[in-house]
Length: 220
Image (cartoon, rainbow, N blue to C red):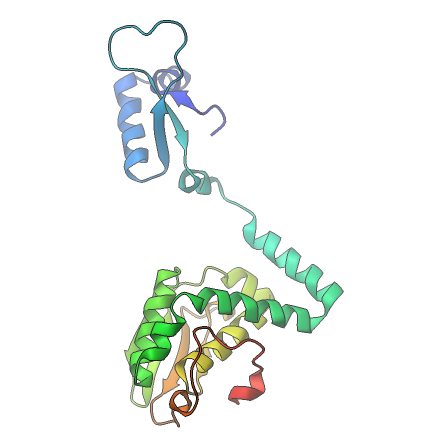
């Protein structure tokens, strides 16, 4: 990270290892997508043999060194709350989840039954890194999200979780109940989707995105 792009020979000299040993490690980094190689710029006339390669870290490789994105997001939302008030934070939370679900909202809404919509929503969430599953229960379906990319931020700003729950209800066409969240220390975010509730999805024409401006009272 400090000296890249750098050749395998330079790494070997720095670490006092053999060039073949260094190349084995570099090949592993390449296979994992944590490094990439490119042809080293030529200096003077090229001699015989393969051109030298230089190695540098990818974004995935740099992620091993940590980042402060969560802290930055919390600080930004704190600033927003101080200068725009709670309504500004809730507006941001709704906007974020609307954008998150927009790419697959039409497919979710098109499913004819609540359980099928829950399965489609789980697939949509998984595509965005939430590792979600729709599991049958005695009284409905439990939508389980085994990972939350914004859990640290949601711990400080539960409005993110609330906006998610409201958006799920709007998209699934039925009221839902959030049973657990990773932000509160649970092992997964679990949302109960009852199958015996009135199917409001069929009562009005659905849109391709989650309706903006929903409030908690809409689904209480």
